Length: 556
Ligand code: ATP
Ligand code: MG
Image (tube, rainbow, N blue to C red; front, side, top):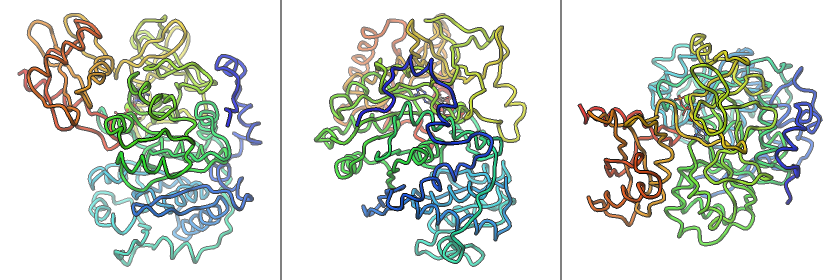
């Protein structure tokens, strides 16, 4: 299949208007719109078209057509009505990637309630923090998660109903049993007549830098998502789109609803990441687009012997969430037969807003360029001035595009603090440092909080980590500042060695020399510590804050 956006990036960008997106979809957004209608009911007449391919942990495949999803989600919306749930109430899921999860997502939006989701790796404290923060009234879960939810409910008094998918372990008598309740409900539902300005989604940030924040998105969010899925992901009807992200974080919702908006099929695997299983799934199913995270691509590279063949169906692979090093991009070109397109976004930006596009030459290691329709720049976080190419500043956007967040839930101060007034208007500051090259490509350097000040130099951790990652003995690396009496800080690297490497002082020296010669003499890690694993958030991002605290303590 050829990409349908054959225009090159610059043409696309200059010709872009949000009306193009509405028109392409035959859509009267944003005045009156409901996400559930746009992504599912609009396609429901295609009785055979598959919305969801689901592979369970047992390896069994099940399918859900758009038509079935439309009916099932109407039943779910009716159940919410019966429970007295009102428009705008918060409905949260805590469950695996099973078909019921996707039904609940669409049904909640159809009803007009606000959808949120919590990744299953959170324990009772993480769950109750989120439910209580936004006064959620409904939780949807499974019987195997029910005990964890019970513990969380002690500290989440707002929750009135638990809807439980019975997976054979029995549920408390007060619970609404998901499939029984739906079976008794009507498949007819009058979709809530929401406008683009009505609340739709409430997703919490990953909590990489501190306590997670609730990020509110409006119904209009979908328009921005539709644009990315068209221009960066290049989705077409007929595509089988494996987005490995869980619905527990916003990328999962973006790719699920975005896939359906364009009538593509979503592929989901219920189990956790495992290189061999993933390789088998890519072999067995005609997956055309893969969307995942750098950790997963790095692990596939580590275990590349399981990938014995290039996946012939794969048209695009994409990445988000953490920096993707040039080495991994080059590896994938050879092994997977596709160029991994790095995309950048935040829960707040609502979408991937700086991307590599299939029609643009990729510069491995760069995040690419702003999505057509979005004004993003590198801005001086002190003055709000736009910086020239080559200078490091914060990634900033104008907040006037459809999928930009409305506010941090209940945190007006924090919402206000994320904007800066510059000489030519207001910018949203992302907290991420990067620079642009002469041709407008963005290069990520690190989170503003993670920058290392050493002997008068500002060192972005990503460049050092990428260089470390190119050494064959390094599986994964994170660098942080370690306080030092003369230099202010030194660069300290925590390294997970590759399976066939044995940590030793000699190896540490060899790795230091590698960075010194490949990168620079002032950026190389003066201290290296080998670890079996690195601390991560539930979404798999390295928690440098934790390592930074450790290094600080060691030094004191
Ligand atoms: P918190 O805001 O709670 O500390 P978080 O910022 O990790 O957590 P998310 O909104 O899930 O929460 O993640 C967005 C962040 O992920 C970005 O600000 C950026 O630091 C990082 N990120 C996303 N995509 C990329 C990418 N392609 N390259 C580098 N970093 C990325
Ligand atoms: Mg953040």
